[in-house]
Image (cartoon, rainbow, N blue to C red; front, top):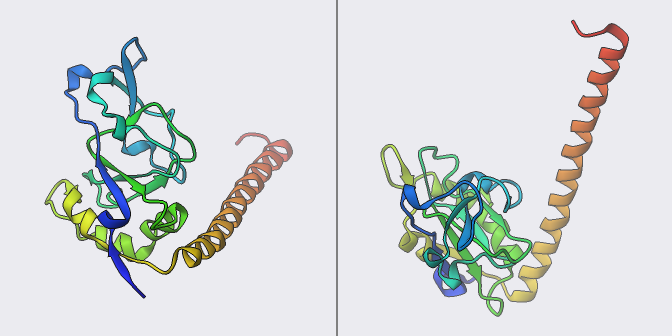
Length: 195
């Protein structure tokens, strides 16, 4: 199977840098929202933990677009470095300097395939060896040079479809388990009261 450096199949975009006094916690005129690493969960939480920065700080290519993959590239916790989520919609905002955006080139790689690979144990093992004693970092140049296994585009789409279905089943199972736990707690409280 062919491999290709990430930078040849996707644009790797640096996050927005700003000083502490430039960031507001509330929206205001002339500012755009910037999400941080905490917004990278199973999905990309675009409206959680935003900082509002002057719109002049955000370049047009730094705005989040559908199918962009946002990755935490710097953190005190090595378990967060490399964590990523895929944007499901265009967003008139960006991501902070401790993150990177990965914008797949649609003629070279399937966004879903790339997202699943970047979420895989193989990639996460690579990120666990990231540099830094206290703060773990993945340099943009290192990330861009990482080689991605690259089957033909149609095969990528087939693989991604299977993985998307498996992920949807996993999420439904998680929701069912959570609902069952809540139901059991409610029945217990109804029968025995709050101890």
